[in-house]
Length: 238
Image 1 (cartoon, rainbow, N blue to C red):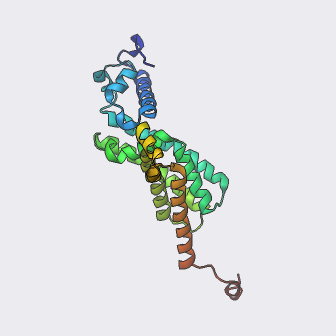
Image 2: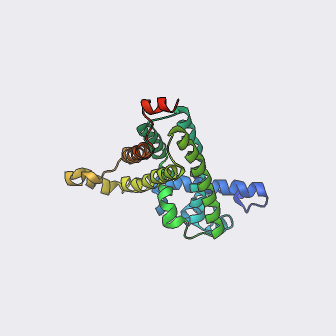
Image 3: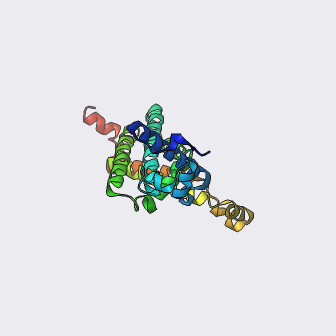
């Protein structure tokens, strides 16, 4: 649905400019969900909001800046949601944590698509200030989620928590691309048993990898800092 008419004349107030930016972002998100981020052009977005491309460039410098802004929004939405879910679980097993992270990402296909596109091209055709703003949002959300992971998985280090988040988000982005090759290619994969491995289900694959990571971290922690035996605790008076 396009928005046309006098209401989409050039915004002259701060509120009107903000409303226009929201409309542009909403249109880009909708088109990305329908077609895939990499296929959506600036002209597509402009037409969806009833603007000429040159007018849209008054609000965003490039299509990449639009989608980079949407990626930042995705982090702001996903981070608090998955933290709340993990907090409710309290101390959780490696499998429970892994499945919570994987499921929360797989349920956000546009975010997964954006996660893959951000380092490939969205950060490469924008101003340095746009990259700086995006990275600040990402780092804030990673830090907050890392703290929660360390609370519910005692012994998990900050470095390990950050690596886990990086694996969850990067794998979800990459697997999402593999899981959505296009209708004709997917039909080819499903029609030939020899190509069955190319049919990707994002959530279980990510969950298996994250479970293995967390189990490995737990094993390493117990090996490096083993818990004292009952006899040792008695000798220590604990």
